[in-house]
Image (cartoon, rainbow, N blue to C red; front, side):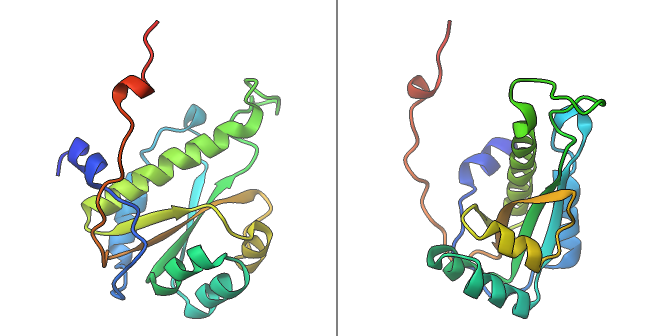
Length: 178
C-alpha cells in the first residue's frame, strides 16, 4: 500500500473482531510512530496498551460516555496516549518559545497518533481516536505519572466493518493562495 492509498482508505473503526492484537505488531506500530516529527525532537508521546478486561470494564463503566463505551467494550485493546509535560513549546530555561505556549504538545501527540493509526491500517488493523472521557478518573486508574498527561484513547483491533469514506471538502474550500 502506498502512502496516499493508506491515507485515503484509513477509516475510524468502531466495530472490531475479538481477535487479540499481537504484541510484536503493536511494538512495530509504536516504532513507526516514534518517527513522527516533534517539537525540537522531544518525542513526548507515550503509550499504555490496555488488554486487562477488569481495567477495560472500569473505563467503560465509570469513565466513558455510552457512545465511546460501546466501542471500547468490543475492542480487544485500548491504547491510552499520554505525553511528557513541560517539554514541548518550551525553552531550556522553562519559558515558552511562542505565543502558543504549551499547546504544541497536543500537536505532537496528534501527529504521533495519526502516524500510529496509519501504520495500523497498513498492518490490517483498525483504529478510532476518542477524546471524550473522564480524564481525571482514567489518569488515576492507570496510575499515569505526574509528569505525564492523558491526551487520547485509541481503540485498536481487527475491523469488523468496512465503512465508506465520509464526504470531503473540496481543495478550493481548504486552500488559500496569497
